[in-house]
Length: 250
Ligand SMILES: NC(=O)c1ccc[n+]([C@@H]2O[C@H](COP(=O)([O-])OP(=O)(O)OC[C@H]3O[C@@H](n4cnc5c(N)ncnc54)[C@H](O)[C@@H]3O)[C@@H](O)[C@H]2O)c1
Image (cartoon, rainbow, N blue to C red):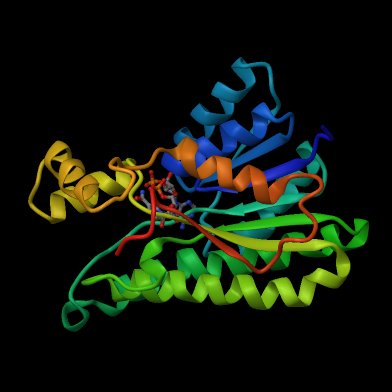
């Protein structure tokens, strides 16, 4: 297995943490990027303690200056990014008519603008060597969900970006795909549970009822799909969205 330089945004927690650990276990050198510095550090330390290579990077993915600086920092530590996982994100849910503009902007800027900024900052080096892998973390909510118009629009946009960028980058050896998780137990689930007025346990039981597989997902479930798209020879699959949600459901 060839060791590549991988960057996971939002790698300090939840799904991103699971993806960072899985890529490191494959022998890749992993940049764990998060806007919460201690979170990125803790995951990078966990990877190094397991004997693999990692660096922690603190940046807000929606800020172009911080994105440029982060890519330069990773370049100094490991070299050019070859595997990019755009995972950073959060939800700020509300009914469409009660959605403040700042919550619309904050969610769209992190999920969509952030993915675009990191693609622009890393793809030229991938093009130069004729190999690159980009995986965007979408959601089954990209199709539809109630009281989260900002999140649904951002994830639908991210899937559009995935297909369009895949077309532009296919001739130069870069694949661009998306993984769309269903309900995965992370800090984000705790926020959803609180908003629904349930304890986390009640919320998970409630959610699991509607999932054909009968359970909620884990970061490891999502990381499995990311490893498929980032494999050395996964050259002929691009512009695709793979939903990892325990079976089709709304
Ligand atoms: N948990 C789920 O059920 C679920 C389902 C579908 C999709 N997702 C998606 O998975 C991704 C990861 O979510 P999670 O559930 O692991 O949440 P999480 O809150 O556990 O982790 C998200 C991480 O992203 C970081 N982050 C947020 N905004 C950032 C920014 N602007 N710049 C840098 N870092 C930032 C946070 O600090 C946090 O460490 C998100 O894109 C989310 O939309 C989650």
